[in-house]
Image (cartoon, rainbow, N blue to C red):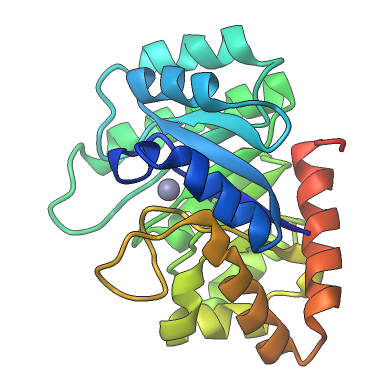
Length: 247
Ligand SMILES: [Zn+2]
C-alpha cells in the first residue's frame, strides 16, 4: 500500500474526474490520499471531498498568495479535529514572487506556532527557499514536518532529517537529478511519497495524478537499492505515524 501525502484533488484539472482518479490510484496501490487546500475557498472544498477512508484533508495557503490567510488560520483552528495536517504553508523565494519575504516569514512563523499548539504536522512548501524554511522550522522548534517537493540542495536536507523531519518525493523525481540526489541523501526512515497532482508529473506538460506515486516509490527503490515492497512498507509506516491515520 502507498500513501500520497500531498496533492490537490480540488484542482479543476482533477476534480471533474475525481471518482476515476481515486479509482486509478487504488488500482495502482495508493490507498490513502491527503488533499491540501490552498486558500480559504479551496480549503472548504478540501474538507468537502474528504471521505476519511481514502481522502483526508490538510488546510493551507500558498506563500505567494497570502490574502485572507487569517481566514485559513481560523478555519484550521475550527477544523483541527478533522484534518491530518496544516499545509501547504511555507516560503517561496522564486524570482518575482510576491508578497515580500518579510511577510512570508511572519505568516509562516504563525503557522508553525499553530501546528505546535494544535499538535498537527506541517506540510511545507519551500520553492527556492529550502534552506531558509528548514532554518526557520528548527529555530521555531517545529516537530512534525513534511518538506514537500524540496528543491534545495541535498546537503541542506541534513538540517531537516537530523530533526526527524520528512521529505516527500514527487513523481517528477524520475526526470530530476536534484530530486534523485535528495533521495540518495535522505534516510529511508525520513522519506514519504507524494504526487503534488496535478503538478510535478513524471511527463512534463501532462496532468499528474495520485496513481503516479507508484513511480516515486519505484525510483526510491532503485536509488536506495532495496525492494519496492520495503519502500512501500517503510513509507507507509512513516506516513501513518506522522499523519496519525489509523486504518
Ligand atoms: Zn502542492
